Image (cartoon, rainbow, N blue to C red):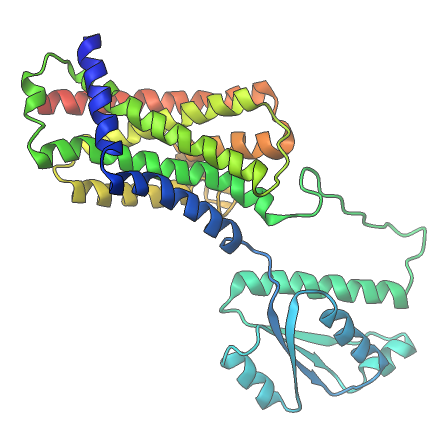
Length: 366
């Protein structure tokens, strides 16, 4: 059995590495995606076009405009004189936001009475609009504190961000991409393995080979585990060396979590491959699984914000548990207890998917 298993593993590795196009497909795209997504997948906004309709032209309205312009997120300010011009700028997407000052804005502030400043945002770009709203609110709050100093006896809010003091978005997105891209590569490799055998007509050779369904599954699993874990290690190194993300946790525990995560993903890929007849079906099946896994992992939106049913379903998602390990290992110095609590459900996922894959392969070999 060991001789047959070794031969299967070598055959799978050679099928990945012998073809130059396959080598390029396995190595280059994940690394390119890591570099591109690390800069493209961000909620920070730095180039906002702003429209200003200022009926006041007083001291404080000009002060607000100057503060907003100096905030570092405004690229261009367009001044308009009518409501129609303001509306047209938003409609034509020439501006994400607009500031509108009433005629007595500065006079009201000098008199100590409430003054209103309207912020109009393009709701078609909801994420950017929400971030821009927070920027405007912070600037107005600073001006209010200068005009009306806070009395010492009143409660004061002091904000401190743990683990990521400067809220650098790459510190969040790059560790998450390690799990997401390693998962995608491993799933595709495994999903194509048995389907490729069927399509090329070599699956029948397994029927007469001195191997068992368990050996076939292990022989397909180990090469994908090697490739997926290697890609994960390369991306972890890129996060530390290229993006300068502080690594505060335990590297051996992170690597253990990575290996368990990859074998749980490999189990899902083998299960997909065992029920597909062609590589095209395997690819379609893989992408139909990858999207829900990413959406239910907490990569883009917190799992806690989802309905209770989806929160329960997400527990069967290995990516959700690995993101806890990789993000915590980079920034939080995750304790061994927390790491093993996240590893345990991934072991259970692997046991279920691996068992199903063996059952399906045994059925096809008979």
